[in-house]
Image (tube, rainbow, N blue to C red):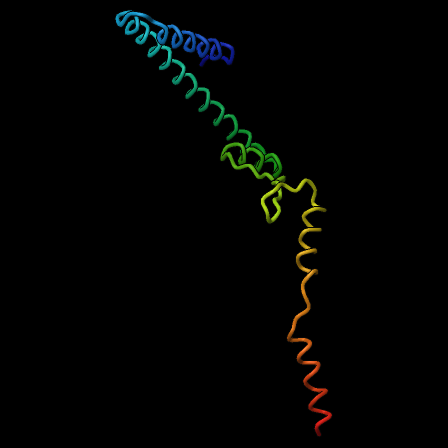
Length: 138
């Protein structure tokens, strides 16, 4: 297994090899540099895969140790890192017309203005007027 600095150096070598390959003027030179780039690319992918497996193994050991200690916070943290599930509770709120609302107060102000500022219902006026007429006629 390579350490992190060796992996980063290998990635930089691959990047330089790609630039040289792309800047080659002759087809023969481009094919030669292409094989160098291909070899470096395989090495980078192989070392990255090994590093990822080692990282997963380490996280699984951490999760197992946390479960043995009944440390649920560390256990769920390790599981979240392994599964890649992140919860973002800071989701921006948009108004009805699509603009971003900066504060929660703006959101609630818009909501209550819409809910509370309604025109008077016409049925209510009609039901109040109806019994009064029927009482006078009897």
